[in-house]
Image 1 (cartoon, rainbow, N blue to C red):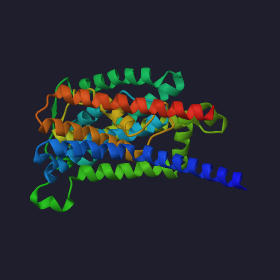
Image 2 (image 1 turned 180 degrees about the vertical axis):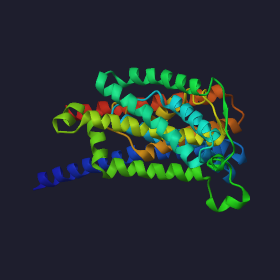
Image 3 (image 1 turned 180 degrees about the horizontal axis):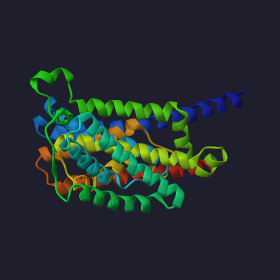
Length: 338
């Protein structure tokens, strides 16, 4: 009897430890965000913690955060997409070109998003048909899409007539204070809720996690792996196109050179937020928190007058630590199973 109670106590203690560890892993990015923000609020100027700067941080997060929503699905799938920055540039060019041609702003915005989605469709088809690793295919698409953007723009910026699209991420005027934050921030939040809902509550979302966890097992279970991959890359590129809309709103021109290196920030946001490059793991909340962490670091360093190379070193260090923790967690899980 005593032995049974002892075993029950030990089992309950082990279960509590595992539950606590699981919660810590989920809340780790949020705790990290609070620590980084608290650090800069404590050592930085008072303007850093002002309401105006908080709104600026949210505005600056929209581009990376929106693109990172699609990248979350790709990384959960076990893939990678290096063409995100180029798709953002192409989207700005398409939107500016359509506006200059006299198209309605809403249709021009949809045109930029559709252009991105078509790039993702090509990427997903090449990966599944040619059976080439995503790194190589998306690296090639990075150059191809960037070249397409430059060709469409005649290797120069495209000026577009002013319209309401320019107000998506602009600072709120006195007559729009009731919105609290710019429309682009609300749009990013709605997109995040939509992606979270798809991943958590739909069959397609379960298929994405299944393919990322073990593609062979997913195939044996009857999941259409190739179709799932094509859909994920198409959706991800559509979100990159939406990020291009945010970028256009910020610049108000079509710039084929914008977004160089943006794919690294987008991937970093997912990894910092707990996404595993091995596939099968990732969350929308973690991704958005990861994007916020990078923006807070840049904002804090800028307000403290620190040079750009310090920001890059800090962000790089956080990425390495996030990947190292992910590897350590997987090694412990494998040891426990073995």
